[in-house]
Image (cartoon, rainbow, N blue to C red; front, side, top):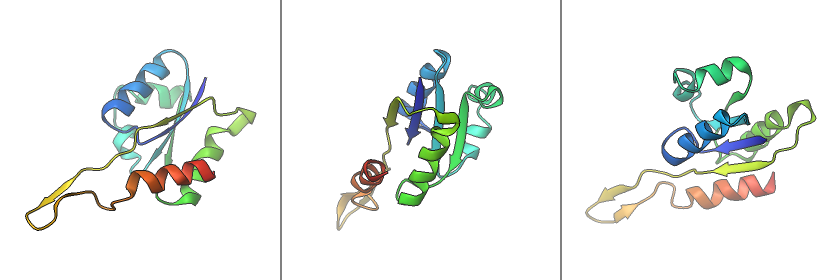
Length: 116
């Protein structure tokens, strides 16, 4: 199985990707900071074996999403599964309450994936 993972550097996405890797899947991660997983002891063996690929990019930029998709499809392998667990941390202010910056983070990133 060939997986393209967007937003899988932490939490549910991370653990889902680790389970898929353990089952023999190839996972391409789109990450704003590749160091988040380069130094991870659980992921490192999969990077070394070629089962995990880290692509530096931001899902808010359509060209970065396309670059990651191209890496995921290298060697004429189609993407079998999109693991999209991207999210943001809410901010709290007394005047505006709880907000997400940017407010359309998930929507815009998902549109970039769909357009790719």
